Image 1 (cartoon, rainbow, N blue to C red):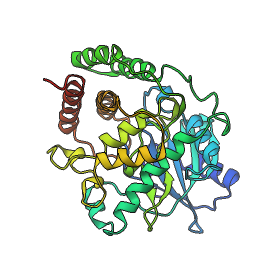
Image 2 (spheres, rainbow, N blue to C red; image 1 turned 90 degrees about the vertical axis):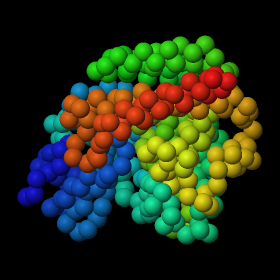
Image 3 (cartoon, rainbow, N blue to C red; image 1 turned 45 degrees about the vertical axis):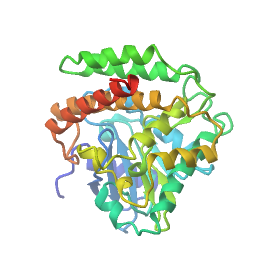
Image 4 (cartoon, one colour; image 1 turned 60 degrees about the vertical axis):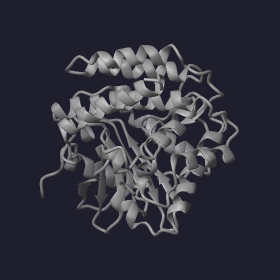
Length: 343
């Protein structure tokens, strides 16, 4: 047997997957690239059947940020809604099987459009279709009543942004290996200017094109990466989509390399106009939410940086420490600019 990737215990996993899901040994476990938090593996059995396994990073992690039961519950609840998700197949909470909780979902055919090169490979006629589908799927998610889909107790309904600010500041305070005073300063400025929450909806928490599987016709085949999903202020998702639409003039790694910067996908203003057509929520305070997004991204990337330094991210991540530090600084600067546009 070839060496199993980090995060996989092949023998007990094979026994569990055969017994619970009917997979036929031998099983092949391959890391799926992309993402920087939970570990994802494609599992292929002896008949060619494919499923996907998700587990937390190895080593010490914040349990609340890597709750496999929560992810499994969300995609199970959304299965009968207009929001496309991978079919949930099974959840294991016995650490003897793979060292940590994990869940398994069906493999969904399609493409993950990750960067500008991928975006350029999308047919020109399909790009605007893809852009509309991404926005429409988000609006569909935000239109769902949590009570009706069985997610009524997924999180507290009010004070979402305040909770986000506390949560990610705590992650930096408890998890960072260095002093970041600007994170605290911006946290305090954001806390002092939180807009009033407009109702409660299901918040994905990291919604963007490269966290979806796209069908050939440009429609969303499945929304992925539900680890941050909760209840709260859905404008955080809208701001995240706008933030990660990217800017080819940014001159900085990931933001300049987003697939949606390719001609034909439209602009962030187009995203907001499409969302306005599908939702009656007031977007006049969106700059504050975008500032929150940049601050939160800085906190998240700092956590990723620390986990990589500790060797907790397995074999499937290409990581650049200096690039992470530059992106953290950039994100904090953008947050400050949005909070005080005159500077």
